[in-house]
Length: 505
Image (cartoon, rainbow, N blue to C red; front, side, top):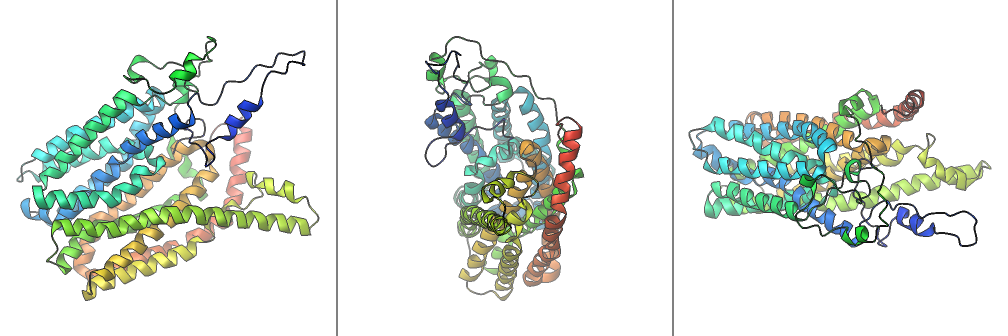
């Protein structure tokens, strides 16, 4: 995620922003001897324009999960046409995930220096070109399939960086396999990559025409003209605000120096949270990647289209889990906040003053964000085990699909809780957090995808998913460790920052 001073602000439910309200309240006082000028707005874009910019970014954000998940239903087919085992075809998924974790380190650094718009477009063009190669790869060149999947991942990785807007990352896992199954079934597996090529190229063209640069170190609040290469061909956004400008040159902003995101891994509480989150993600990938394979073996009459439709269960569960977990997190956060206020009232302290302590060291933010996670992990474990034994026993297809919905719901609920807490701990380093999160998650997920078929062959579906669920159980004590050591780690970071003049840790 981007840091607070880099974000494209989105409107609240009322269509306004706190800083917008503050800007409108500061006016010239005709009775005052001092001339108080109206300050520069945080952003020159209107509420409608901000939503449009977010929609454009969300459109681009669709392609990372789409290019990953659209591939899953045809894994059994690729195993046949390339004459390779499922393990070797899964290796192409593994390499995709590895590069998806590494590439944001490269693209993110370039984007912080040269602008988000340019890097975003370059990634989409790279994705489009790599899909041409994948669509034309000969079936006797498995090495080329593996190589081009790495390039495809690198082209979609910066899209993950922009995926904080959640439109693409939530829709992609549900829509991608359905499209992949239908295309593979009716037009052949190569049509999947032609579709991605055309769609990503069309998205890149749309962004070239309309997307403005939003990096504040280049354009400030949008009123500073960016370099020519970073300007949209058709400048639809912000024209009215620039036309109303008084002609005073807005202050320029220096580019921020490079901050090594890996430094965050030296914070014990953050490293533990990233590890816990990565393990949950790895188990999810183990389930998600193997869906087409285990369903194809257990229900051999399913076509590629029908296999793709089965992914709606887990993708829809992820979408539902994201919505539910957001409301659940807010509800429990407010419960902890009210509990602190009530305790302060009983102790004779000012509840209003205590309520504001959530911004300081005294507020138990770790408890507020993570205390429901053990329950969510238990539900996730139960869904995973039940899904595995439904496959093992070959019950009606409705059985495993129901539990796949549960896997999707509880995966998103757990990961959202952990990711929200990580951002709460270092709110000014959102980009670094995202980079580290991607790195840890992708490393653990790639390892899981590399061995999942071997485990399935050795243990069978039932015990395989018991083993995956067991990893989550083993990781669960990390939640209590974070709650216990978190306040001390926060206090230490604050002392270090104060001692170094506010430098990032």
